Length: 303
Image (cartoon, rainbow, N blue to C red; front, top):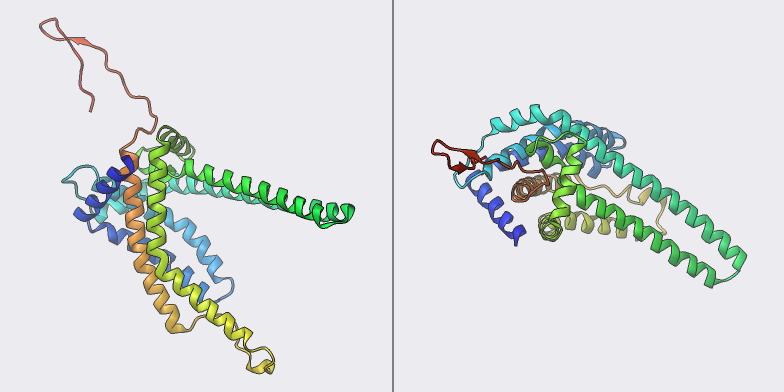
């Protein structure tokens, strides 16, 4: 299976080039302040960090893709951190513009979803009043769930087809808009193998994220129970907020940084290996036969 062979290529490239983990670490350090301030429940600051991260991330992301591209080129290929800075500078603007286009797609789906949800809520409310029964309410709710489910499915399908746009920007030298077409053609021509690739990416992401997400959910649940058990207690003795302690924040941040370093290195390298192993839909040049010295036809070898 093509997804498995690309996985082997990616793992071999990482094994030959452990410096790739430094790229993943750099990206983790960029998102670190946002996570820490979110866990500390500091108002407004996480949003500011999120905006800042949006404009800084393309530089490091492009550099990691460039390093991954060098790492999987051949069985002896090597890469260095100088590639990260060089490719980051070269591809920063087109990747940033492509990210803005992707953000526009997400916002568009969000607006449509909000409008549809609002219309459905009013329709169900009016229908239940006019129909005067649970049957009308149940039927309206079922229709609402089906429509929202179809919208969610459409969003997943769109993301499935455009998921390789950042790789196309860096590896295929595609423009911000052109990269989405490159990704679409690659996935359209390799739907089954892309499904396998996506499943592997999802499984690895879930497994690597379990320590962090599990701990956050567990502590949040404990804090909620503590607040609920405070019912009937005088207001001054009720626990203030659901925030983590300083020690817990440091622990979560450290584990999250390690997890993101591993996950980023794997995901970026695997994406490049898969992209390189498949035809992105670019028409190949067809060489015309040319006579050689003896009058026989030969076809030049385009590499």
